[in-house]
Length: 226
Image (cartoon, rainbow, N blue to C red; front, side):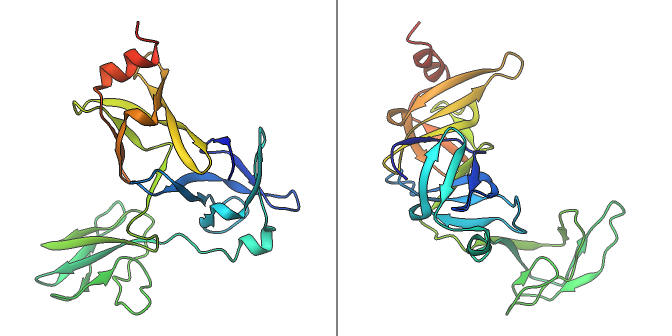
């Protein structure tokens, strides 16, 4: 990944020119702002894939080109995000629109929500509606991404130092594999863009980008200090 603008949502093609999907999120080191790769949306693939930045061979106005073809891309690591449950007493899970319940978990043991859990016992629920545990439960989110990495994308909120929301990420600017700034879509009624340079960014998490200036100051500086 050389000097280029990375658009979340940009199309991704294989070396054979075939479309593979689009960029859903960037994978970033929050301390150095280095981009290690991105999450490739489903597209022609059945599941979102983790793509290393070193696989990018070219970028242009039409998107990104990888050094892999569709068959090789299908063998890339699949992004895994799951939630573990543990209760001090037997738990049940509500599912569907009718909140039917059935006892799925035992006490003081971690269970993986969903129909399969590998080496972990699972709740067995298969509804496409998100499961809500009924009872006193502890939860823990797990992922196969390294704990020292975060993912940011179009739904990532941008928050001023005063706690006020500026808006959400629309574009991410990258040079030499490091984030140099973001373009924020702001305004609930009158939609407009706010350009935020890296010097205004105080920190990154999975949920938000935190600024070292207030939301009002970010807007003012984006307009040229008017």
